[in-house]
Length: 439
Image: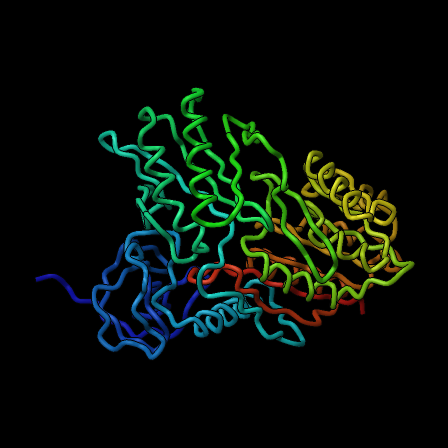
């Protein structure tokens, strides 16, 4: 007779798993919610913890809802559709604060209200992978727990215009030679939607004409202008006859339009990005005559609003091509006199290299998941008078933010405020912001 495992769930972690304790050992259970009693099966047993999955929910929590997506049980694109939306945000905030305390041994003086974002139809850029099974094309997200691809014909987190385009795009690609398609991307900009096809091998004139014909059809049906790009190897090039309107997103509060290319990093939702930039600017309070450094600046998502507030800004980024495009964006928006950009390896920073950038009144950090440890440790090599008076940190990984926050507090900074941004609703992924003042 198979052994039954029953547990009461007491918490929820940053990976979207319910947390229970069984015989003094932590158990992490997929899809379980705090307050629930579940029957579960162990999937991975370690010395200090066990990972499991639900067999049955014996006592469901009040926040458990029926997932609306037909692919949810298999698709790895989402893992929180079974949780009521406002509870998702509350659980993320609690998990984030737990990581601050546990990993960084710090917490903010003020816990900021979450930036909620939208529950559905928010994801304005998406990358889907392609595989072939018995000659049939499957196009979608990676499955839960495996590397398989879940074939989808629509997606509830995509805007309707992108979701409805998936089926006709896949039908066209299915007609091409088996193995020719590796994946695709969709980007919804201010004025145009971009389809990027990731192709293995060449593409014939007939195939090009088919794409042009499909986009004309999609344009007529949706009312949106469409363009297409081709990615072969590491090179991505525009294939549509016209380069206008450009693929771009806007920050209307600062009268900015920021062009980008499909491979560039941009936030998944323009509306939530606007809220994030607004909070960052409110915390930075840029003033004319101030000098501000924007580390990991990308295309200028924060640099250009800072410059619009008449402060001098230096944007620093690891990729020279990105610095070039950020400079072009500054020129395009009439800010070249206030914003300049330069390339540097920010993961190899030390005090000597940091001093070359000169004094800045304030910093903004927006690092990738790895965080900004080298940059923050370099502050230990500066005199107190050389330190920025305020640091605003935008994070896509609570664990590295907690680590870096602990380092900043150890250096002498005060952890003034912090909180989450729900940029990826229906997932456990957490973005957050924090602000630190020199003592």
